Length: 516
Image (cartoon, rainbow, N blue to C red; front, side, top):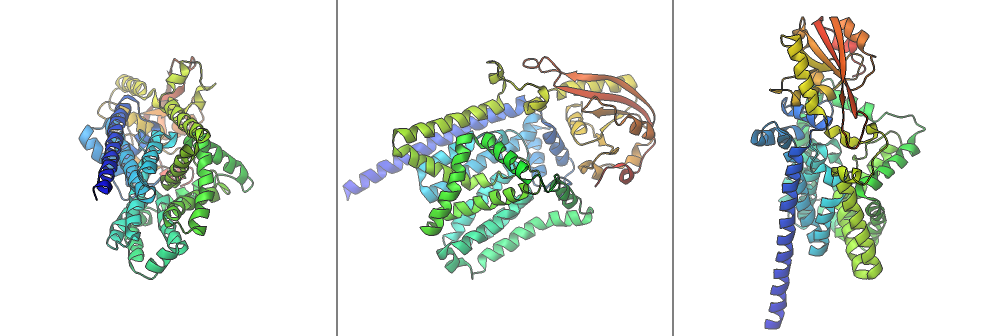
């Protein structure tokens, strides 16, 4: 009796110790991420989403709405600051990591769970998502919480299905492809003999699905009452290539994954889809099969879209929630296999950390002479220069006198201007032969008639000058703002076109905008 109890207590103590160490690491990492949040300027999409948070609604032209109230919540705590906008991403990353750990621990035990959590911290895609406020960290938090809750519900806990339904609906409200979690779970119930016999004819999974759709329904109603704007936008996004470009977009997507996940880990992930599918189906390993279903559904759906249109590199991010757990299990087995396996695991981890650090702190690479040849190829340049632009616009407004409004053709420049101008005023987008954005629902251009304005554009071409002359009585182009980031680039990283415009005549939005 005693000889059996003592080892058990020692093991439990060691397990608690490892969890405390992991928890301490996550706390320190979260604090470092908060520091990063506050010290780097917002990218254009983040500034745009901050604008969403100032116009809360059940839906938006570009995406589902859940990110906006999360930004609003944290800006109430930290103010309309860089930290306030991004704190939600950092907290969501912590939540996602916690649920990945809990799910992995239930399926494979603590060692795989710890490795899974560490992978969620170090792969470049997740590392960037933890400090940039986009839909992805919000979706990952709710997808991982849903995955864990459904897994608990499947282990004969019927009441957990209600929570699972609510979380699944919120996952879809975070990002549209969150709806894929519903067919993913249904696929598992169909493929698993034990789950099929237990749950296929019971009402709880179907009730959970209905609850998820009810939670998602306000977004559907918003689209219905806003001329189906989002569905039109999605159709345009899904039709960005000809029928002959499928292989091109597929190889581009896979290449992006090699960088965003890191090469060795992404190859391991592809292998895990094969190995886990075989193991889950042929060996009836339900835990592995569950993780596989929630990953392969998203990845396969994204691949299917690439065959008909260009996709963004992050569209499959939800596939890696349970995919990382499958990868972690393979890495643990490889580590235990011997010296060669440990070498491969170590190389995979070091490469992933290196790429994550390079994404977040490219200046470390610049110090050793590594940089992209042209500034427009470096996406990290988007984190710089907006405060300087705000200062220049302030000078232009003072020189013009009165209260000129600030506008652009798209969502990018007006959003950055709104955030970095004193008192963060409302800015505008006039769709002068340019595609629409959420700005179309926030403004009435007729109320701006007669006012002067400052036009911003993120290019030095003059393609829209005739458009400006058509809707203003007079325009005065000003010397462009040249934004530098030196080091590493001696040439400007951005040219901001600035035009003083006088006497706005008003315009018909639908006549001028390019598409819907």
